[in-house]
Image (cartoon, rainbow, N blue to C red; front, side, top):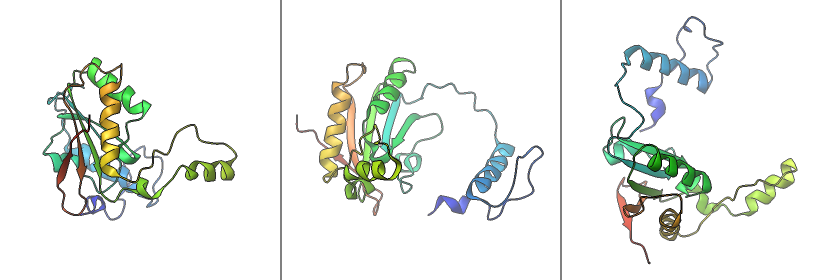
Length: 187
């Protein structure tokens, strides 16, 4: 099921004060937000996740994490990027999540058929040739999704900034079946 099925097919009349309309994807999203806001009521939550868990996952549009994990609004912190890779910025977010907002567990989710499996660091070189500047970030491509999950778990467990590293678990989400497969560490 595509999430676009939940968006209005065409923008409706723009609400008062709307900057523009025109039928772009962003216009459709803004229109959907207005419909959402019409029925919205403040749930009275704060920023601390109820289940005290942070989920790090790939940004892939096929992963509906809340549905796949049976989560509701307010249950977890969700941190997503290309590949679900544990980068310095993910460590930053996890550190804030743990030290300032009370999370204790980390769930890492990669998935089958990830786009990073078809990229290499050559991607950075190509960007440099195109725009004249080499990106400061690594692509973090991989060939073995299980090994990449293990590497991500090691990065979380060994970070000096994270105080809760005893409940770190990693999984591969199968985009064909919707099932998670747990990855055991080799340490």
